[in-house]
Amino acid sequence: MQALAPEVIVTQPGYGSFPAPQNSNWQSGICDCFSDWGVCLCGTFCFICLGCQVAADMNECCLCGTSVAMRTLYRTRYGIPGSICDDYMMTLCCPYCSLCQIKRDINRRKAMNAF
Image (tube, rainbow, N blue to C red; front, side, top):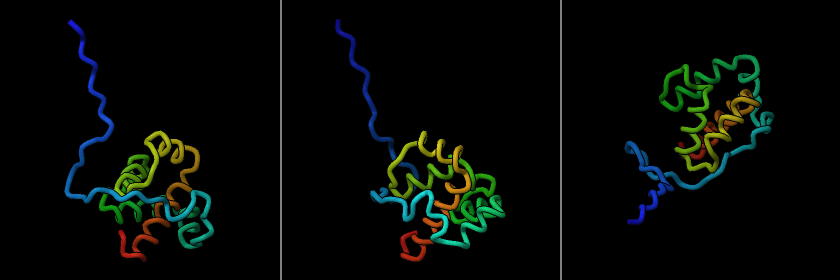
């Protein structure tokens, strides 16, 4: 008897009532902090406050705003390419830039009525 090859899952099933994500990209680069001075200053001098703003925008717990999970949730919700490993490295190596990038993206999507 031959052993059956294991089934490889390439896409995960969806959860909740979110529409299927559209493929998109970040609205700004990781180092574009100066494209929005308000977000840059808030991230620099009140990192936790900015994390709470991001979490509130995403209807999540304030304690989650600066986490890898929040970046991954945001990225997958909007179909932004990447991986959990990328999110982890971005959050570990550049936490301020990572959080500012998410907030800038939220602000720009709100301005385009796409949030």
